Image (cartoon, rainbow, N blue to C red; front, side, top):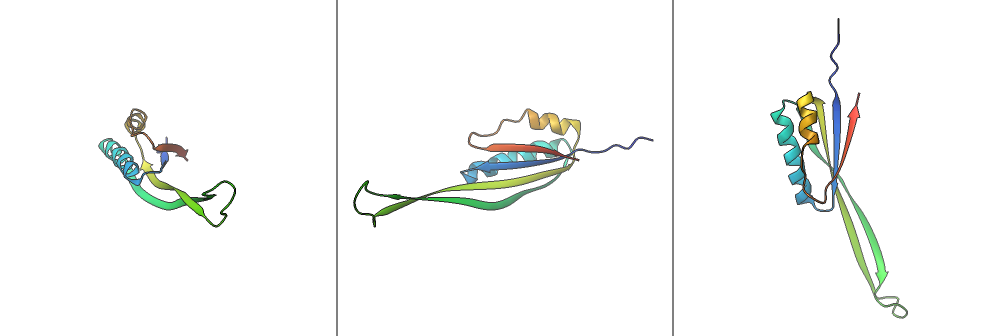
Length: 107
């Protein structure tokens, strides 16, 4: 009696541009659906906003400042039932530039 355990995969996508991030999530989901995997997501996670305040001048006019911000968008995709074809499809996938992909194997 052998028990077949299916591998669970969690993919976290990060990017500064939400349109590129949604494109990457769409291509990942389309390639995984072709292999017959069960998919949960993409789940939008909270946007992390990092703000930086700088003086406009170097020495005088301390009241004159500029603010800049960097927004980091995240998406989470879970695969509950995967096949070996799913893992091969994910490895041979080409994603747009500017997207950071973090793949974790869960038990």
